[in-house]
Length: 170
Ligand code: S3P
Image 1: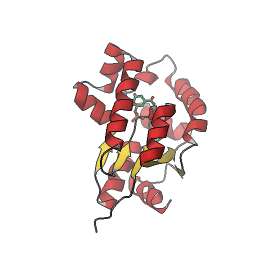
Image 2: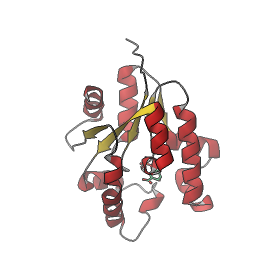
Image 3: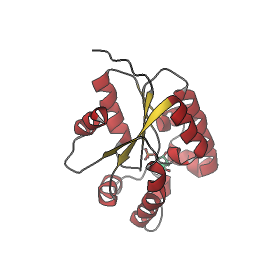
């Protein structure tokens, strides 16, 4: 059955929370389009997120992120997964509140770390102590993520599909 979404469902949360994987599964279950803001930024720039950070810096990336978010939010309702920093800018939060509904995929440090530790794709974690960096980001960002209307907690035993069903139930 093709369901009509009234608003775009915007998945937010830390790197490793599963936004892209859960977003994909959710879109499949609901039979609606799936979009990913990082992928859109990469496609437009023809560079990876890490390359954009290295060449043009984080402020440039954040500006592209806001543009892409606004563009995607002005289209038809869909499932939209965002980069971990997207919800931090007040303007982005306002745009999401106007056009969508934010869902925080909440995960604890250990789960996030297990998922990101072997990947070298996240420029913010290219530090001498990436786990500590992740912990610091998690602590600083959690109160902001908590502004999302819906919170779904991740757990190591939950599959991607379990998480997608929890989002639908929430
Ligand atoms: C970022 C998260 C990344 C990506 C960029 C910055 C962040 O996306 O947007 O590296 O600030 O947390 P994921 O959350 O999909 O890893």
